Each structure stands twice: as structure tokens, then as C-alpha cells.
Image 1 (tube, rainbow, N blue to C red):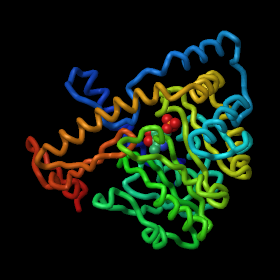
Image 2 (cartoon, rainbow, N blue to C red):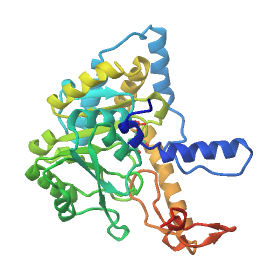
Image 3 (tube, rainbow, N blue to C red):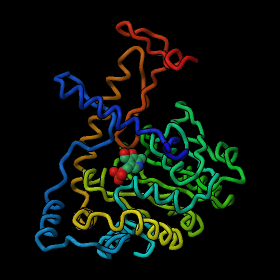
Image 4 (cartoon, rainbow, N blue to C red):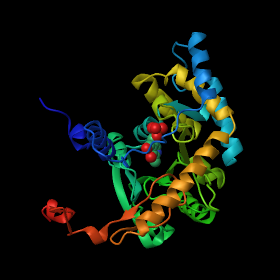
Length: 349
Ligand code: PLP
């Protein structure tokens, strides 16, 4: 009988494939370093673990409301107010099994078949596949390294068609480390409002910004854009909690209800214990994330210096997240220990 056309159109995550390869090589005793998966190498702070242990001991092990506990939703609303100047009600929040799940919920909730979602490239590998899962059509908007991988409102205007339903913004960006300024976001917000398109604002790396750069949420530029924006965030990267699987959205109540309804059938609530842990994380202070940020800053400086001191590769210094986007154009067509590095040749182009 085979599998559906939709399933056939979804490719596996290349990040996970490379990570699995790295782990296999490491297990075989090879001296390799994995640069594929975006995961802080720090352990989850003790105060967060303690909250989870207490939750288990108190028997907080039953179903919770499908879209999250009132305590966690309150903590998320407080965080959005404190860090981003955004006022949301608990009913505008949906807590999911990681920001990945939040994103899939979004596209299922907002896309009709054929609706276009604009994705600026270079992009995080999961976005196009998530859009396809939601029956949307990913439309790639290219950017240039010399522009710091940023698109302009003119670029965006050219990409918008009558079928455009939304735009993904990921600032700070995986994989480029680019961060949009307040003015750039304000300009994008004005165009989104003019064209009446949703903005899916993935702010998962908001706490990891360097130099004098500041993170702004595009939803904070007025009521109209707030109403069109779905903010995506989570504790994976900010509190070294990738395995706990807690992400969330903040949006207008209609979209929140649609996502909560979808989730109530697909997964019910995210893990009850992890929700307690995430509540402790968000109600705590930023001491831990600040420690991680300082360490990532040192690593960024080291990586950027080492890459730019090599003859065939180069990179811009990222202002956020923990990724470095290398320019390997000079290596294409070169031979390395007898192997061709030319992707065009490999692909038979
Ligand atoms: N958004 C971006 C841009 C990411 O890089 C990642 C993880 O790599 C996520 C979302 C997913 O985070 P979570 O672990 O909460 O699913």
C-alpha cells in the first residue's frame, strides 16, 4: 500500500543524521568533534532538577490541562512581560513538547493546503518540513552573506503573493547567528501589517546575544503586529533543558485555541514533571543563562578567529545563538585526501 504523498515529501533532519554519524564515529574511537546538533553542553541547573524531583515525590504525575498548567502559563506570561514587554493572558499561551512541536502546531493551525510560508535562507533545516506537515508550501527567500544574511522589506515585498499566509523570523538565527535590529523588525512589522500576513517569530535563542546587540520581539511593535505574530520560545536553549521537551507559543486567543485543540488530540499535555521544572526555570533569575552566554561568547571568539585564520574558509562573527556560518565556496571543486568536495559534481549538475 505504501505511505502517503505527504510522508514521502518529508526528508529526515540532516542535523540528526550528521549527529548520529558523529556519535557512531566517536563510539568507534575516532577523534572527532560534533558540530551538528544545537545543544548546550551544560547540565540543567540543580534548582530546576530539584523542582522536578519534588514534583515526582508529591505525585504530580497525572494528566494536566492539554495546553499546559496554569502555573507554567502564568510564569510564561510573566517572562514575556518582563523580558519582552509583551502582555499576554494565560489563555493566549500553549505549552508543547518542545518548540519543535509548537512550530508544527502553528502550521497545522494556520495553513490551508497551498498556503505559502516565506522562510528566509539560510534557515534551520526543520522549517520547510514543518510547513509541509501543516499542508503549507515553504517559499525560500534568499539572503546574502555580505548583508549579514538579512533580508530587507523590499526583498520581502517581492516574495509576497496572494497565497502568502506567513513569514518565519528566527532572530537570533540558527544557523547564521544574525540578529535583526529594532528598526529592521519595525519595518518588517509594518509590511506584515500592511499585507495582513502572520509572523512566526522563533525567539528560542533570545538570551544568547553578544557584543552590544539586543534582542527585540517583533510582537512588541504595536497591537496590530502583536495580533498577527505567533511568538515561539522554550527552555531548551536558555536553561540547558533540551531533553525535557518544553516549548511554548504566545499568540492571539483564536490561534491559541486552535493549537490547543489540535494538541489535545495529538499528544495531550506535555510531560507534567517537565512542566514543573520549566516553571521553576522561568521563575528563577538569569544567572545561569548569563554564565552560559559568557562561555558561548569565548567560544564564538575562538571559532571565528580560528576559521578566519585558515586560507580556504571564512565566516562573519555571529551576534547571537551558538552557530557559526562558514563560507566554504573556495573549497568547492577541490580535492581533499582524494575526495571531491564539489557538491555539484556529486549531485551530477
Ligand atoms: N527553533 C530553532 C531555531 C532551533 O534551532 C531549535 C532547536 O535546534 C528549536 C526551535 C527547537 O527547540 P526545542 O528543543 O524546544 O524543540
